[in-house]
Length: 309
Image (cartoon, rainbow, N blue to C red; front, side, top):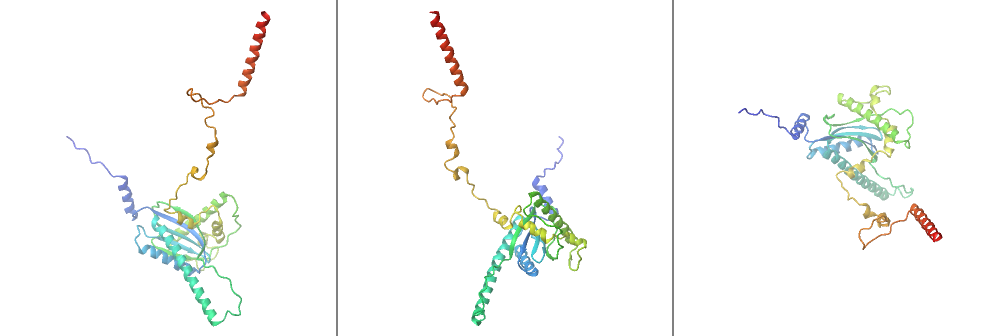
């Protein structure tokens, strides 16, 4: 009896694991791109992001967080890669660092105020307004690439630059198509910037003229500000709040009482079922006409029979 040939009995899981080994991954990786407006110096904001990434990667990570940070004077664009858990963990760590930084700055302000009062330097001065400390003014999520097969970065680094000015004006109250088009333009510039950074590990924009081809890869400040003001782009803090959160679903009948269906005559056209329960059927206009015609015919028949007698 001839033996059956050995068949390839690999499952989908085997294929996925082989693809993971080729790409040196343990699970699905994502790439997140978000932008924001910061209130620190360039070195200060870079230090905050660098420490946040270090804190995430120092713990257990299925895939370490790698990426690239583009920093302007008041704006930034951050491209991060990693597993879904590690990327969202770095966002939680970042917001926790923001809270700690605000508390620390408030403490310094209080100590400075107490020192001035002790020295009596503010006795003759007018009271100044309390400065609200913030690390980020606005944050928006631009896009998330799920299940990426190729990682662009082997580590994390930051690049500072001074982008060119945008020619023309953007209407924040324009149609949705205009917002989508500007988002596409921004993402195209970011993709070119990532390719440029991938090819040149010592990428720098210092001393470049506005006509340099490298400057075309930088999103303009006006473009970033337009996207941050857009109502069609989700807020990053809201995304973090919704991650792994399932809210209780409230049904319609739990919110509205009594229901509109309670006032709907659903049994209006119900036919006779038995002798114990009969609902009156509605009388249609054409039935009234038929009834009048029948009564007239009966009257004519009765008058005809009486005359013959």
